[in-house]
Amino acid sequence: MTVEIPHELLPFVERMVSQRRFLNEREVLVEGLRLLEARETLREEVSKGFAQLDAGQGVPASNVYARVEDRIRAIESGEA
Image (cartoon, rainbow, N blue to C red; front, side, top):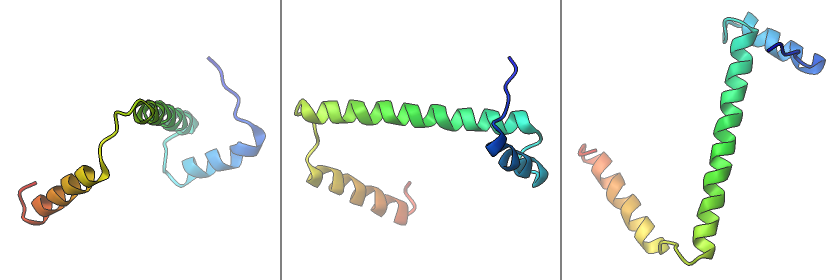
């Protein structure tokens, strides 16, 4: 597959390569696609979460805060 980088994005891609953030233009595009894939996965997970909340499958906030506080204590004490 051959892909043409839009003219307005070319300076950004070239800068990423010239600053040695990426070895070549292909790596810039691959990273962009990875980020897009991650964003879409997150969007799907958030949608599932809202559907669970709408179905009454939520967790009380007090339970969530208690778990977070327990986790913080474990990290602070070196048990994590």
